[in-house]
Length: 238
Ligand code: HPA
Image (cartoon, rainbow, N blue to C red; front, side, top):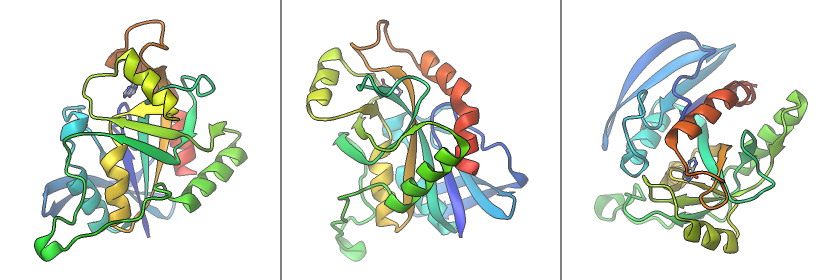
């Protein structure tokens, strides 16, 4: 079984792969280019969610094509990285959170592979949307590597591409959110529909709007991600 990696903001190259090749996978939602390579004897498939140049905004990512392509190419497990803002003062910039729940505040995205007609209708169970066995494995691996991780956190997914207002962040705190980002939904849901074992390694890049002492910027997110990328990569590849 191959492992897929979806690289989020600031994680545009898998690194560490041998015999790297580009694959073009046709899907009903468009063609997707993947990198394929080996880490020891494990075949890895890599896909940068926003494109290598961060040219696709979160609300326009072709989530269905990405997940379809990973499954078509043989992925059974998918590890996704995600830059997130933190609403929870215990989850600090630079720290990794293994997300276990989401709250969906997206508005305009295709959310399913099953649109009726020949495809039928599917009401998929997402009681625990992120793959619990892979999350457990990630937690144990992190402990072995002495990498501190938070082993749960609720990810609030906003539509973007703008950041949030301070008022929205207060509301998300009241609702029990820990982290805010723009991409986990529908990605995790589609992965579940596709039968993939999917986990998100969220990297806190900033405190969320109104908690951060300064206005948010994409540059800050990319810089913090750049500093933390190596540890994230170490955990994923281990
Ligand atoms: N809000 C939404 N998405 C994000 C943030 C944020 O504060 N930081 C990184 N991605």
